[in-house]
Image (cartoon, rainbow, N blue to C red; front, side, top):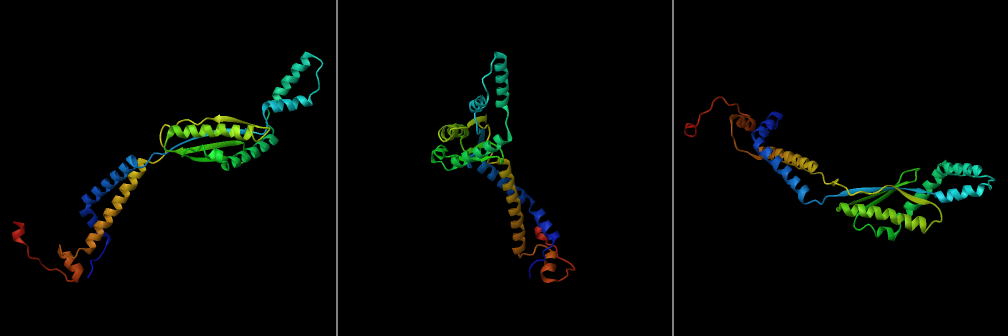
Length: 244
């Protein structure tokens, strides 16, 4: 007959084998930490942000100049230049919408260009444009921090030369943030992996301890006889030889 399994018995088994459980937990935690620290390659990430406009300052100035008539005096000419400069600095809703569309086109061309993907150099590249804006983020992940930064900046410069200058007769690309060399990897997390290993060691050692207790059919105390055979114990004969 199998032993009765109760919460009290399980707790007793775990307390009886507490040294084994602690040792297994520590060993598994250290093994996972060493694997994470010395075997798994560290991963670095960096990004550059650029903006796309459907016009350039010179194009806006020329457009404004075409709508202005010739001024008769120097004072009037200075006023016109001041007004033109202020006009060039303004961004209208139509400009934002058109620039956002141009940014989407650039991202689509980027993702389907063999010339751009050839610059990845073994890194993982993700290109996104925020919805409704003209800001493009190029994120590069890889095992070499310096390479990630170089690839991100090269892709941003190549996008400007390849798409804006060669493909379109209008617009411009500017850099809001250049990619910098990351100082530390974002993965793997040695602490997280160590805790995962410790948790696995704790659970496995507890299960092993309980399993050993369940398959162990030897009688160690009077409680085992009562549990297995259902016979109450009224007295016991002490083993004087083993007790000295």
